[in-house]
Length: 472
Ligand SMILES: [Fe+2]
Image (cartoon, rainbow, N blue to C red):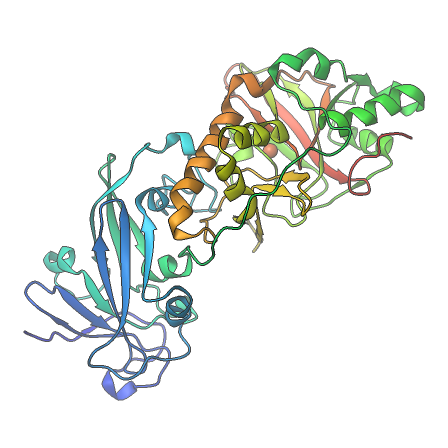
């Protein structure tokens, strides 16, 4: 057995055994075994042995004290994870694929997901898993042999950006995805256990709908000038917001601020965000947000990474001369209840365990919320739907033994949202707008082309009390 001393790049001070206690020092102490099959790294103050076990459909990382090192530190993130999870953390192969960090899966500029669940293989297996350490002098040809490491994880991982990664090759794509070890430990799931499933109902006055009700929903259309007059038209129109979570309006000035007239009809107020009072949805080169592209978007609720999430959203059309670019809306409550009918336990999982949503934008914007995808009140009333695969961060709060069922329910709910039988599809004309209750109704648009025309929508979010009142 041969020891090989190696040093990983650091921003902090350098040192070896003599630097014991310096939090910033990262040093591979030794590797042993033929081809470097075991790797030791870290300071002398806090060492762990982490072994990789490929169990086919599950990746297991086993955390053990360094047999030749001092007692474990009480300060590292690694230990916090270890203490909360026990001696190992496990990741399903599908979870790894779903949460892959590569540039084809997530936009490196803002972290938004570039694929949907439907893009993922039905069955994912782990072909190979090993540690990968870049920028070190570790023999490159031995890298694939590293299946065990001793290391310390600092609280501030920017101090040590080259901590070992775990390289996982997944089938059937036969692609290798790298995960920073610290990221895996931080995002490990399986801490809690499920409770019993409550009964569920819709709020009073809500009417569920699907594609068969397209005429009913299109009949909610009122002219803006008529709404400004108040009276029965306005009352019925406002009631429709509560009943259907959707209304249309015509006669809106085809200009940026035109939709504020609609907000005024509600007596509401605009909820300004980091995007400003308005958000433009149009084709733009080199987009920083997927809403700027000509790609179609899966049905979603807006901004689930805000807490509270936006309630009422207006989408107003200024120009829509392109091919495609139709709008779609889906009743999230109807979809959730359909899932519950098909898979009560899956519904229970999605309504019990929080999903994490995250967005990183320009100028240091970093938004984060942790809420169930299907929110149900304590007495069983549907409260809200949050579904946006592009803003979905890794799920951490589902018990390990439930994660496959959780994913099955997540995928099924996604498929229900995509089902044309659930979808109302229409094309907005300039001067038209629609409003959705973003806590219930999902919206989407089909792929469009900027070659044969332009598509330019304006969106704003606004609030009126907690829900639109049903009568004036
Ligand atoms: Fe949206």
